[in-house]
Every structure is written in structure tokens, then in C-alpha cells.
Length: 77
Image (cartoon, rainbow, N blue to C red; front, side, top):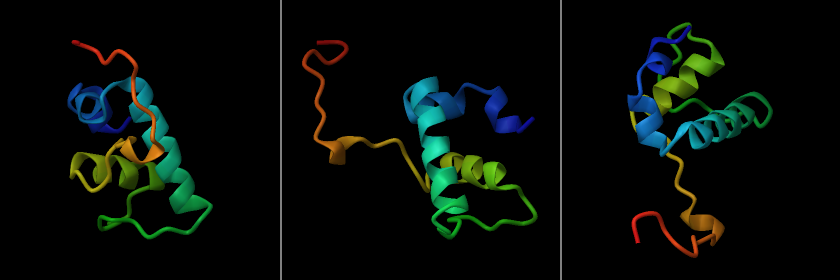
């Protein structure tokens, strides 16, 4: 198992487990299907390991601001 997935740090970076899973899935599709270039050195890592490294190094984030979606009642308000 990829060590970064054992800690909660990566979950906090993405804002939750669901957002993390969605981000990983989206980025894997970009790399595998669309042929996007990795934003970190591959160094013999699998596609999943590359995506995890991109998240941990803040190369990609789960920013949904471009979608136009806004919560009616944001958490904490």
C-alpha cells in the first residue's frame, strides 16, 4: 500500500475521503486515458503513486471553484 494513504494528511489536503477519491480518479484518467504528463518525476512509480505524489507535493488540488457550485449553507455558518 502507498504509505501516504495511511495518514490523514492527504485526506485533510483534499477536504475529505470522497474528494480525495474523486481527485485521484480524475487525475488517473487524465494520465492514463488523456495522456497528460505527470507533474512530478515518475522515478519508476506507478500511475497511482505519481498521482499521490502530485497531491502530497500540492501540484494538484480538489478545488471545485470553477464548477460554479456554491453550498447554500456552508459548514460552520
